[in-house]
Length: 175
Image (tube, rainbow, N blue to C red; front, side, top):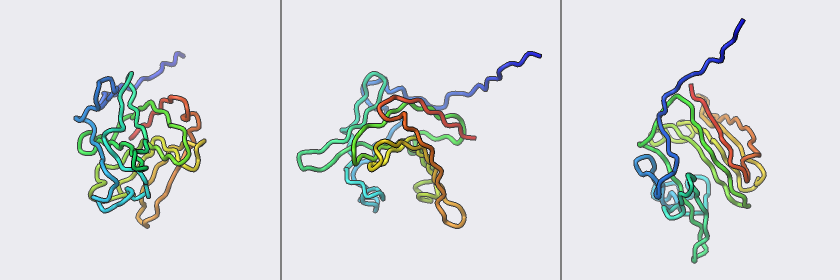
């Protein structure tokens, strides 16, 4: 008997290789400020930084987001989304990423449901593709959050320790 490997062919729905001089604003939005204008100061997580469009750099096919302390001793960073620009509900998401080192940082790459602006979090669902908590600098996790009918927020987390200092490739398949 001869066994053959079956390959599933999927159409590419979205790709950004970050190979231009500037962020492609056909795909990406900047979330600016500290969340106060949306009624959620600190973006609901007690974040201390203010988001600007100045903390992003594209070089050699990589997007870098840098946290900085400005002359007023305040922290700035950048936060980008694809809200209302890129959306899909099935397929495979593939990223290459590396988390920074540093106490107090809380970098994350995550996805929210398209209905986040109408139903809010966690009802929209959230997948943290990669997240590093500021108090656990040796731990990177992949987590899913959602709300069940009883209002409980179940969470499933998986450790990704190799994502500190090393560029890793992660694939997530959606039904």
